[in-house]
Image (cartoon, rainbow, N blue to C red; front, side, top):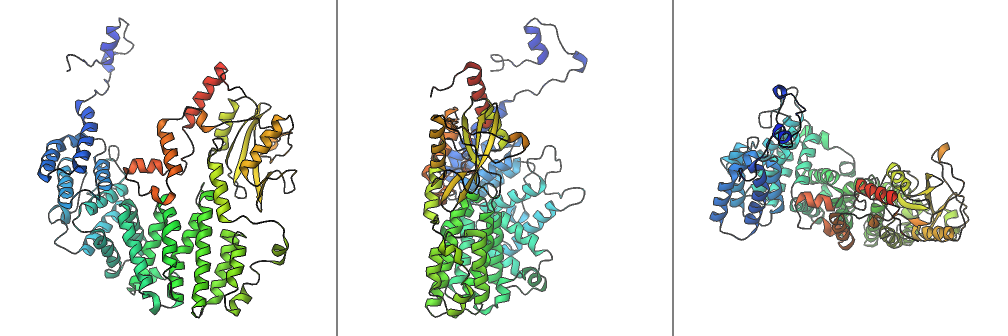
Length: 601
């Protein structure tokens, strides 16, 4: 093979072309040779994954793994490979085979330092609570050391696959996924650990456990959610006071070792949903939050559920660059909360802390939903007790009742967002700098719509005119969208209709003089939109098109459960899935600009 395809050094290549050497031989440092092992490793990765996935005899798989495992001493990312295989095949692999796979890799991978409880005793000698105490202590040590890292992580940072903290977390996940214990026992041990041992730094411990849960397959998070629902079903919060449930006393209770299982489950659930990725959080707001509220039967259960839901609503609403996507989900959760309060009052539950509950409803209005749920809320408030009705009499002001403008409901909002996402000229969350780069390569009149970086606007129209790129924000008032101030010449029911109107107006030779200034240099005297710059016109990659089609066809709650490897699932669930490769798009536009290859209108 080497004789047929020889590998030459730089000097030998230069000599073969008959050119004089451009380097000094005495000081020449040869480049790294390609290795046959480097070429074999991607093939062995695929072979091992397929062998573990197919219903083969365990002994055959074990022999195959033992034969190929020595190659992984030279694998560039052995921990990532081991973690990915266990994560992706969590439902397929038998536990003994998982352990054999991990221990075989451990013998040949230098930096895979597992606990003695797993290597020697397979998590069978001591309790699971003691195991998690050891794992949490290892992660805490790897995150907080002074000079040298602990001995169970890579000592050479230059060649390490992960940072010390990330390496310890992934090693802990590998142990847990290869453990013979089911997810129910694992999550229960995490909860019991917080009850057995008083913690000096309880928030550090609970965040470490939450990070472990987010790095594990979704089945572990589902078990934690089932634990939370079990607390509500059994009304385990009935013996706690309002102050204990609502106010943050977790750290003090941990230091005094006075913790209760319901409060620990609530705190751990909140940490888990705070650290999770946005696609998992979207599943929570769409599916799991209504399921919790449907089981609430007492006021204490209601406050116990709100302790988890309200901070997560805030996170949904303030998610960076995703404010338009999560707004409708916040509306649905708030609607469900209001309906559940009405149900409790209708069955005769006396709301003792009604003032606090009314204050929370006002908070929902002014922070999350505005007047979107006003009509629904007013109809529901009619069934509240008189004390609560009096407290909520300012929920809809007199001027709100007199206004003629219709308020956009959540279903209408969802439909109009779907229409916007279907337009190829909507580029999502790209910066104004990239918008200018792309549009300056296009003829005048080209435009695109993108997410606004302003807190008071959702979208911005960027367009090329008079040799510059201008940016005009789209304002919304009630159900109407428009460009310019609050009293424009034209308003439309949606952003799509607004853009269509401006394009038709520009094609007739008419111009708008509507502009929000970004500075003195960005002042525009007119506005002209003649042709959209579409995302799909710039030869995007097949990978991008597949991701776009998956996101269009799959419901948001079902995307996280797709049977895909973690890296591919992360690509599919990326928040900026609408944006193609911007550098590749720029190159396509440069070629069009150089050759004049623009579509004829």
